[in-house]
Length: 419
Image (tube, rainbow, N blue to C red):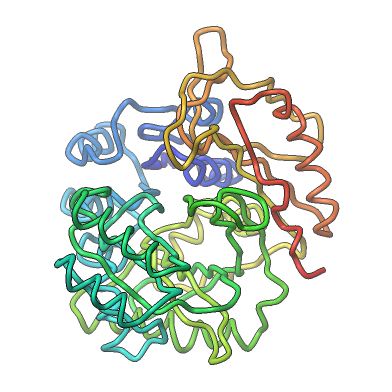
């Protein structure tokens, strides 16, 4: 079986590694891929949003299945185009991907179908938005309506911070069209977690919970990022909370999307928070989350391509996960999530222990070394029977970055894990 993976980050690299475990998969192509993915698959020089070229390539190569990694091609209709060409593709249509593509849509959808989430209002007028913030007070959350690569959310601890965020988005166009409207919502207090599910119509097959670390620096300090590390499972998320999330959030979303004429196929990501009233939704993503996927898929015992075939055929994939912990820590370019330098040589990435290395923003040079090519450069992960063992493997490996001032990583990923 030939499989095409669309995307270029860490999420796509772990998907490739998972596909390599399958006896049914003979060739893997990735468009466009990255330096590290080149070691595991054939990279194709087509960008993830060049939809016509992707369809043409899949037809010419006789691709059996395509898996879409990132949100941008999904919201631009890549799945619609592949289906029109009678190609098998795993991911939601443009109509369904709006659950991630527009936070305003997602919030109004949740309100309509009684799915628990924070109270909110949406604004395109800066003065009305500021008036609402002053009326509500702080802490308060300001979100760009559209896609902003995980950076369009400001958790404002003061009214002044919230007003500045609105000014940046609505007046200064910090996120372009993505920030032409803002969703302002109440601040929810609690621990966050993520729960992915494979979805086909009304059928929902949940995975195991994971927890992302969004803030750039240790002890959850600094700006929000696309994620600085993650772990799975999450022991403090109870079975009751998981069941509540499945029955009161994920299944109602699947049914609601059918009712809206936006039937969902693919991975649905619930970004959730534990509150005194039970789990509530912070956001939905229309695909595998990054970096949580890098700790969830290593624990999945099933053949990924078989899961996809089962789910899309209406069969229960009978998901099974290892009785172990997976932890992953991101190595980022200095300056991320702000400005950073590219092209910095990485130290040697030989394994040397039980850690696994997932490439997110790397390029490979002519002499077969790796250089940085993004804000989040790598994720170093490990699977072990205890969190302590996984952490020891990861942080032993990461010492090779300590002599460079071009990179940084959080030293506390998973250390709050309830053992």
